[in-house]
Length: 323
Image 1 (cartoon, rainbow, N blue to C red):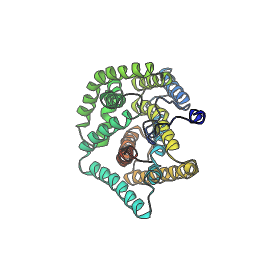
Image 2: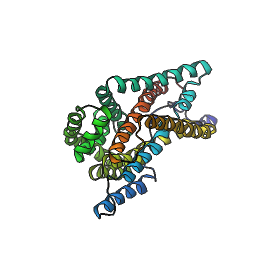
Image 3: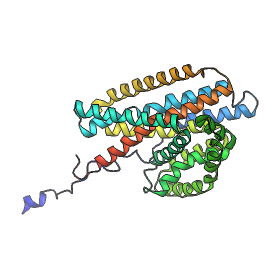
């Protein structure tokens, strides 16, 4: 009887992969966000004081570079995550790589054949993907509206700039009404996001709420490329880097970092080569607007397979009995 009393009670088996082990860590803010936000606000203040033009070529080129160099690597470790989750052999990995490249090629082809449709698909993918950052909220409307609010807020604050960017991306006058539609969505998305911020605050995610509020302030007061860069590089990308670190075994962290850096350099090299072929590597405001549009097209091309694989991995790791 005494021995039996000392025996530990049987513990219920916990699922190996749940929201705490697979989804992006809820409410975590990278230390990088704050200096990046301050730098962006300082850039805006300098423009107000007449020290430089906020839409000058150096400022715009820097914003594009920060957005791509700081944002692209977080999705460049997808194959390492897939290899870990599925314990793939060479044949299955080859099939995964082929499918991954195929989705990216399909998105690129869509930009070539139907750019207006590609823009709408890109906005939908972005809203869905950015909404995944709000892991402390229930899946559904709250997350989707929070993701869409990033785009809608920028369109509300700078309708002409966003319309010009959408027009540059699509080479179509329909970019202007699409930007107007996004701006019209802003009041609703911001209202729903306010509810999400209140729930996140009540759940103890105070730093996350303050960072998101600062991010929306940047989107409301700064040009779209700068405001979006603060959100994308300061909040979104580091959150998913933490997911990579948590999901991969420690022995694979170094390989994942090298893979992320190598693929980022490769993608940027291909993109710069394409810009050179189009004659867009000229530091003029009109040219940089086209470069900014091309940069967002590039993000959509790499985001499409990234999101598809993320959804497939999420379904896989949440399967009953997955270890």
